[in-house]
Image (tube, rainbow, N blue to C red; front, top):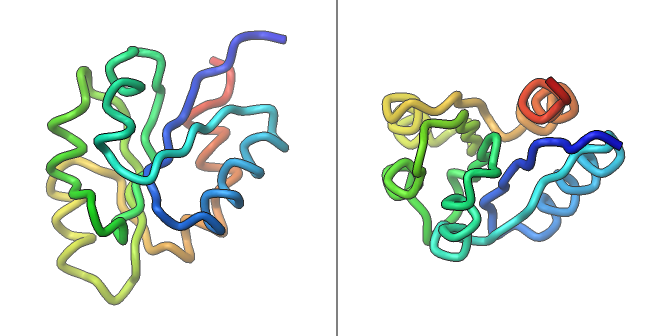
Length: 119
């Protein structure tokens, strides 16, 4: 099996984490999950992460902290509540691709294939 790229999910929501990692596994892709940026810092520094899926609802994480922790520019897909317009706008201004959580969930297979599929 060819080596696939690794995605990183930062979310404290265990149910949603299971959905994301399970979907990736079903597609033959790899997503590692962390509940905060501090725990993910070493993994980010490895240079093996192809994209970050970032839960804007994470209480101990900010999009600014995430971008500061990235050793090189990689795609960041941020998702959050559609009612939190300011948080979504701040993530977009920081350089993330942004979408409401419902859209992220409904297009998850496509997001994973686009960012982690074999190139």
